Structure formats: structure tokens, C-alpha cells
Length: 113
Ligand SMILES: [Zn+2]
Image: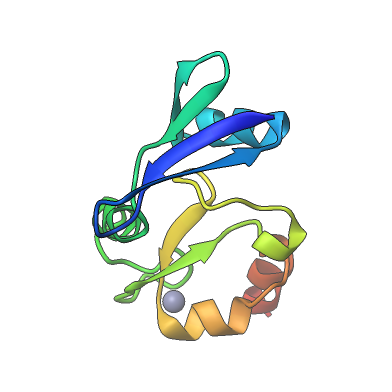
């Protein structure tokens, strides 16, 4: 197990034990950095992460190009995706809802019909 450290939106410190594989994914996908061989640190609070993604994507929906202010997981959490800068994009309400937990490929294919 690896210790994951972070802060809440209000600045309070928290930590939890996570699986090694998850720790590797979080670091590889730029959500966390290595502190020492047993500890990683989450780079963003929930609020900061949301703002980071929306600004990075210019408040533009990844799917339709309209204004968006929600965060969507490319690989849904239900299918093993994680909340990381690599797996998250800005989406509009409509696309976020219609995509739900389907695979990205299914969604893009439906859209093309
Ligand atoms: Zn959209």
C-alpha cells in the first residue's frame, strides 16, 4: 500500500492508503507527485482540479465545442477511469449527461449517426 496525501478545498490535510497500481496511475496521469517511496501527494484539491481542467480546455466542451463548465471522465469511473488531468475533460451539461457511463467510442459513434 502507498500513502496518498492531499488537502481539502478548505486546506485541511488528509491522507489515505491506496493500492500501488492506483498510485502509479495517479502519478503517471499527473494527478500526484512522488514524495518518497511510500508516499505520493495529490496535486490538486477537488475545487482546484475542476478549475484547472476548465481553464485548460477554455471552458469548451470536448465533445461538441460549445461552452462547457462540467468535468467529464473519458474512461468512466464505473469502468475503472480515475480523476486525473489525462482522463478528465471539460464538457457541456448535455454531453456530460448523454454520455453518462458509456464508453467514449460508443458515444462518438452515436454522435456521428
Ligand atoms: Zn457538449
